[in-house]
Length: 244
Image (cartoon, rainbow, N blue to C red; front, side, top):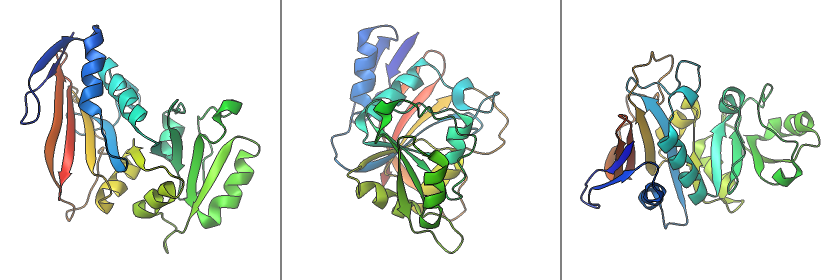
């Protein structure tokens, strides 16, 4: 299979074999960032806008290049941010080079699929929750190596994305990548905290139970292309910067 860098104003066309070492080098160059503070959104969607495939997770949408991009984007980050529903549905593996921050407004993390029995995870998993839910979450996780970041919620018990980002910054976690799911991603988009979108489009027509981004009619953003890859299987990999 071939991976092609589409020519843009900022880059020339490049074509490599997926199995060649040049492929990872191309992906690494394409997704590198030199800034010390940013918020990226990294997600996959079907042609119809679904964030999940036939099994109800992103596993049936993704491919080898998408997983490679995931690793590179995570490698650039200080922290990977996900919603509680994602760790229930997807069974998240804690990243090797970044912390994992799980956001919950309800404080209900029952049914999560995090593997927390490894002592090497100490300090790697952060639960971001409303202040009034913090004690219950500490009790729920017991002796498991998780940290709690308590954030003041609004009158409806919800956490504002800007307050989540600030709570991470207070812990020196400035390079942020949000991986969804759709509910958390949509909140981040509507709050205007995302400055770069790393979106894989899978060549799949999938029924949409919930769109990968559900935003209201007042949320409109202009972007410019920072990078564009495509492969011979029909997948497209977009890197888009928000234009002020």
